[in-house]
Length: 300
Image (cartoon, rainbow, N blue to C red; front, top):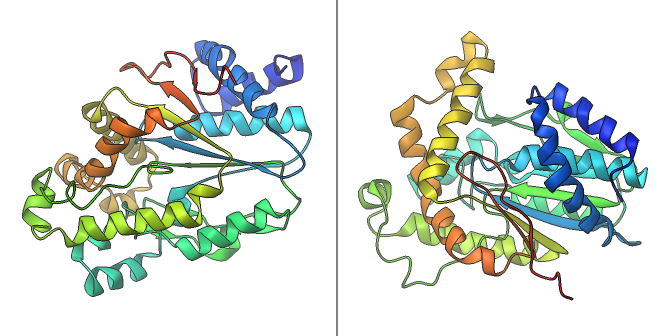
């Protein structure tokens, strides 16, 4: 069990480091620790890969950081933890893709704006016990850090925690892609080229990366409207932590509204269909608290 004193002490320290309220320990004891126990029961000789899906603002990064800490403390072995966002293609490469295929692909977000080759390579190395370098992406400058700032996993890992807003998101069929669902699609993707391309790449993400996961865990937001509100809070926090000379790169409220529309189609479809397929679902309430743990295989 993960409720040992070293684990509890480590979690309390992480709560302080992340400037979370002291009462957040309740989330740790009621959700994170039982969830870690579920994952520990699946750890074997080969690295366990866990896909963590959640729309913006659902708490993917916080959940992942605590799971990494708890699992490493219990296993006394390295746990890899990183995000789909780390694999966004460099700024200049996205600008070129936007010229070659569709202007909306200049904006990071949908499948097709990530470096799938690198993603596949890194995960393959980790799952085979080899050293791997995970890229680091700086959203404030909308570009990838130099390689000397990437995170290196030198020792073989026991678990791979891979979180992302569209990890394991189901693709759509051609009929579902026909009608635009917001102003962005209606005004800037009238013929559907962009959304069809993103959908095709999402299928490829599944084939090459997502399908390698042993478990899919979903943080399920109440609805898409809350996703926008939570993403707005994220942007406000980013503004507070960004140096003044880089603040011009950040989005104002109108720019953010347009930006979030890039994610809307896949997010809405995911909310409608992934809960029935995810191995574990954590329903997130409007106040960001977690309503419980739904384990689809509890009776197995």
